[in-house]
Image 1 (cartoon, rainbow, N blue to C red):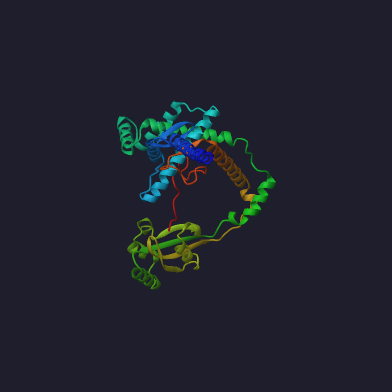
Image 2 (cartoon, rainbow, N blue to C red; image 1 turned 120 degrees about the horizontal axis):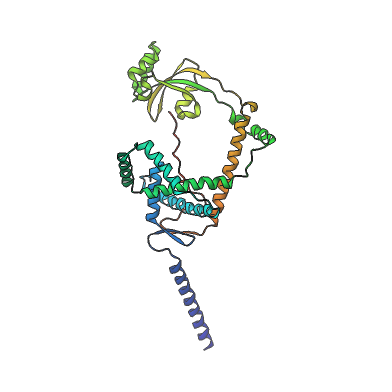
Length: 344
């Protein structure tokens, strides 16, 4: 019947559509072991792992131990790897080429600095690479990539000019408070294991014993003990919050604490105060102008990275796909050592 033919046509249409979708999925799925595909090139998980190991040799980059953090690290590493290849293409498009001899010279200087000269030094370097799971060829390749990225950066930002006097003055007014030099205090500290020991230290100091003598005798902080507890002259932002709150709440010469930090129980004293100083444009104008220019270069470079990554045809496997594929990776291309944390 006509109705029967219509039903059959609809059913066949559904089957064909479903079959087509299944065929599309099968052909679009990345092969096993592939982390991502960029510009038609498959990059395996082993490739990504090897690149991370090379970054570990050069920059101290290491995967975290926590399983969830390790998973996020793996996905970010894949995005970093993909961005690196996208930028390799960008450098090639601009005819940026780094001679292997140049990369070799950089590597030789690093080997000499960290391992010394001669065959024994070369052997020690080779052993360190083997232990890290990477090769000299990989290290040379990464050195060359960083040199090419430096040239690419210079090319991308070459037309960023220093800001005008008017722009510098306007930015200074907007940032006047943050540009001021904050109050800094010369501090000494005695660190002990628990509150009763800290209370005993306070009692000794209140009784008139010199702070430096008590520090040399009682402090568990090897970094300051031999100096009589002297910690240096620091701003509040350089200190752990609880320690800073106590240290900046008392007058010159006064003992403060006990206060608990991640290092233990602290008793401190203020031995000097450098008052806060307001920013004066005439004193900082040229360094501030250079800072503003550097910030603009950074914005130009970030925009370039985001645009190139978004425009690239990067597809990830489920195991490596980042949560936000088109944003920049947290792991920088050309990783840099992490900055030190708070002193106290």
